[in-house]
Length: 418
Image (spheres, rainbow, N blue to C red):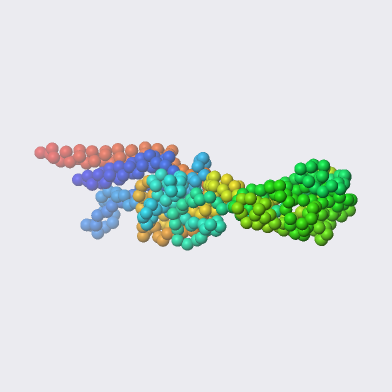
C-alpha cells in the first residue's frame, strides 16, 4: 500500500512547520535571516519503461534556503551599534583564538579590555590606526579601543583679528598692565606649551599717534620679548592705512612674526615656546574695540570621552580636549553565495566551500553596504507571511494524515476479506 507518500508528506510538512516556527521565534532577533524549506518530488526507477505509468513515492526536503534580504534598520541609543545597509557581514573572532565567524547582528559594546565585542564575547575585526590616526590596511585585527591619554600639542600658529577704535585718545605713558590708564584696550587668548599647560597671552594696546598704535604681550605677568620688536617697551608698533587696514608692524610690511615665551615665563617645566603670530587682519575703524576672531592650534592632553562610527566604518574617538582621532576601521566581508554559509547559532555563520571565497573591504566599497552608527538591522522575517505559511503547512500536514488514514482503511478492507 502507498503509505510512503503520506509518510513523506507528513515528514515534509513537519519540517516546514519547524522552519516556520523558528522564523517566527526569531522575528525580533537582530540580524536574523529567515529560511524557507524547498521540496522535491521522489520517483522510483520505472519498472514499466513508460513515464506515464510512473507513480511518485512522495516528497523530500532538498534545502533549507536562507533568505539574505535586507532587514529594516532601527535606531538605538548605543553609538557602537552598527546596522549594515546592503551586502556584507561583520567578521568576528573569540579572544585568543583564530576561529572566524560572520554575523549581520551589529549589537556591539566595549568589554573590560576595550575590545569591541558582541553579546557572546566575540571580538569585531577590522583595521587599526597608528598614533596619528592613520588607518593601516592589511590583515584584520581585533578592534580594541585605547584609553591612553591623547598627547598635547604646543601652539605653533596663532591668529588675532580685532578692531582698534580710530577715535580713541592717544596715551603717552608706557604700558603698565596694572594701570588701566596706560592703555586703551586689552584682550587675551590661550596658548599651550609642550606639556599641554594652558597659558593666557594678554595683549595691551595704546594709541600713540594718528593711525599708530603700540602693544605689549604678557604671559604670567611677564613681558614677552619677541622679534621684530626688540627688548624696549613698548615691544611692538602697528600703523594703519587711511582706509583702516594694517600698513606696517614694527616698521616693516605687515606680516606674521614669531614671539618666544621662555621657559622661565611659562613656569611649567616646558621648553621655550615659539609660535607664529598673525595680527595682519587688524583694522582701525570708527567703531568700538572688539575681537572678531581668535584662533590657535595648540591643545592640552585629553582622555577619550566618546566614540562614533562613520558610514565607511571609521571608528573615531572624541577626547576631552576637543580633539578627535581615528582609532580604526571596521571591515566587512562578502561572499559569492551567502546561502552557502553554515548557521552556527548566536547570530553567527561559518564559511563553507559552497559560500565561495571571503572578500574583505571597507563598507561602501565594491558590493559592500554602508554602516549606520547607533542602529541595528532587524530580522527580515515577515511575521504576517509566516503566520499564513504556518496555516498552510498545518493544512498540508492534516491532508497527508488523511492520506495515511485512507491507506489504512483500504488495508483494513483487504484484511477483512473472506
